[in-house]
Image 1 (cartoon, rainbow, N blue to C red):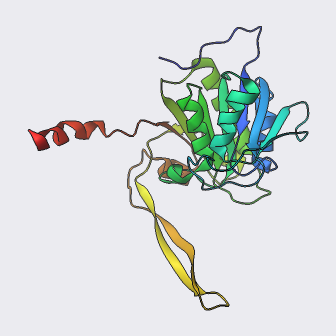
Image 2: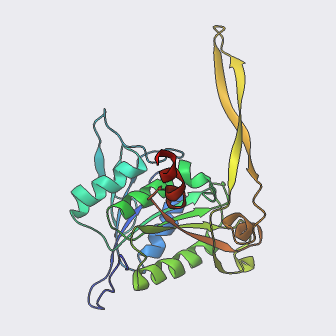
Image 3: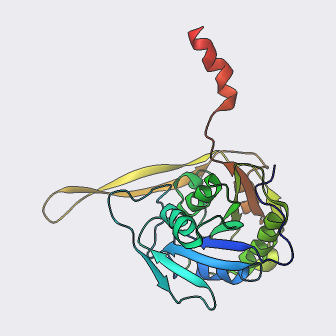
Amino acid sequence: MATAKKKSASRKPLILVTNDDGITSPGIRALVEVMKELGKVIVVAPDSPQSGMGHAITIDDPLRLESVDIFENVEAYQCSGTPVDCVKLGVDKIIKGKPDLCVSGINHGSNSSINIIYSGTMSAAMEAAIEGITAVGFSFLNYAHDADLTGPKKYVKEIAHGVLKNGLPTNTLLNVNFPDVHHKNIKGIRVCRQATAKWEEEFNERMDPRGRKYYWLTGKFVNRDPGDDTDEWALKHGFVSVVPIQFDLTAHHAIPRINNYWK
């Protein structure tokens, strides 16, 4: 069953745009430009970078929401909270209802494979999906502030248009990543599974001027998944990876086995 119904030609879809890199990032500006071609856009995004926040929400501090004039002819707000806070406030206080689509990004950096667990970009999209809103997160494997977003913008429009037209299965959202290649060399879209990969972290131990220890997170990303049906394979070979994901973390395949433990 689709979460989005087909809209009549007489009404433009309402699209909520957010991110985790902050409201002034080039990635969200590119995303807003594309979404303006598809519908009416409202932006609610963090007032500063919130990368790696995952699904964090603000509990003990007040949240600030301020109207800003950043995007031409677009209603926009900056929020003092996390990406998930932005979606919650956007739905409850700004839109006061559900938009037809929520898009998050375009993130500067990969959110493929296990990165989705840590990603503020994807957690914002997931929060929208939890609320029954059709949602997509977009990320680009280029961390440069001035990265060329020509290729991602083309495919953002294609993917968002398809989702608005056809909807998504219930309780499902899309994790979309763009390869770091010239836009003319992108080979197309590939629907994939999430690769089984992880970060192998190290904590660099240092001493501050007062002789107290502190730690700096370092490490490397390791993919030991040889499959040619994964997001990592697709990105390595110049494809846009599209991974359908869900927020139900139940290991359904394990239920029969675990049931036998107490019989």
